[in-house]
Image (cartoon, rainbow, N blue to C red; front, top):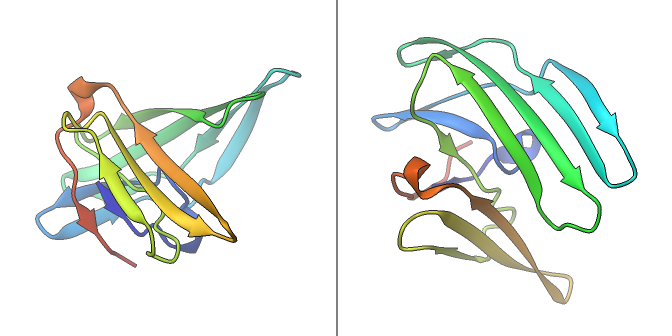
Length: 137
């Protein structure tokens, strides 16, 4: 699923979709650095509890950035819901959205200053129920 995450949510921003409405956390409220080695940096983002369609949701993300990799690993811990939507930032909305038939990945390719930027979400097939495009605030 892709949705315009706005200027502060960034790619991988999470939401719960209920009907036509999205329920979303705010920006992270605190962080903790786990490691800052020469090959890997890992940090934890904590979010204030936020209201989902079925009550409060607790969210935490552990982000790992590896030297030489173009991908970040984001492990999400959630309480209060079993279903989420993750967004890809569409920036100027002038790119192309592609996805795997089994919904295990989705990416957005956009032209940028003479080159192409790609923004992707990849997950295990067992977690991917489908995808759709929706533009929200």
